[in-house]
Amino acid sequence: MAETSVTGASGIAEAFAGAREQGRAALMPYLMGGFPDTETALAVAGSYADAGADLIELGVPFSDPLADGPVIHAAATRALAAGATLERVLSICERLAERLPVVPMVYANMVLARGTTEFAGLLADAGAAGVIVPDLPVEEAGEIGAELGGAGISLVPLVAPTTPSERRRRICERAKGFVYVVSDTKVTGERDQLPAGLAELVAAVQADASVPAAVGFGIGAPEQAAAVGRIADGVIIGSRLVRAVSEASGRDEAARAVGDFLRETRAALSGDDQA
Image (cartoon, rainbow, N blue to C red; front, top):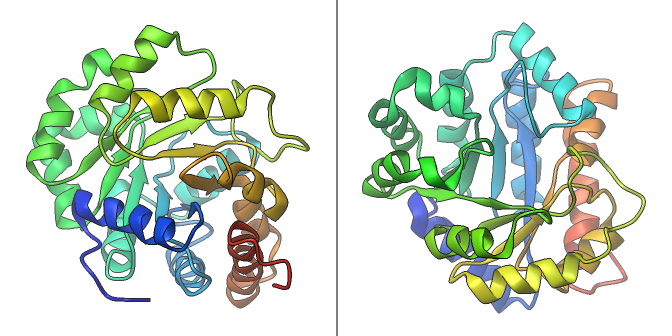
């Protein structure tokens, strides 16, 4: 992987542009920071990069998540039991940021506990490209958005199928980095089918926003990723990868399992049936 400027907001733009030049959507795997331990998480992240990931969403474990389903919630619980903290997860971010853009996902409580200035400084020091705060309403995002923007970090907003059109437009107008399109109203987890109406939702976001639209929630197979990649700018895969790590017998098997899956998925995004 080319060693370019991957930290800060410019890293996100470069990652999407690079994928677009290759005629595919960006591949964006999710990593639970510190699960099941820091060294395994780093090995899994390295496998993500080796397999062709364009960006990494780095989850910071939280005891009472709102959006995460049972697989990711269980991983967060194990990571917390193993001693994971925001600072320890950001140490993972710092090491990953040398290879590709990293976008931590944290709940608002962690931002409020430290204050917006300290939080933005922690992310900047760790080389984060952006951050996702799923329980931060757009009306309350001004202060932290300004702090992050001053540090060159994108505050990535979310849009769901239930977001009213006028509110969606306001969210998209203020979006930095990319818009995270939540595919359905359930919590994270693998699904048998993509939800009806997803193409229309993605098209509406792309019409309202000046940044790419990446879809997450429910994508658990390469063919599903390929289908989403035909309508969106990025494909986020979480529970399927976290499950692979939880089912592995050790660090090497976990890294191998996620790498095999992502190589197959990246080939599917590129339309390569032979991979």
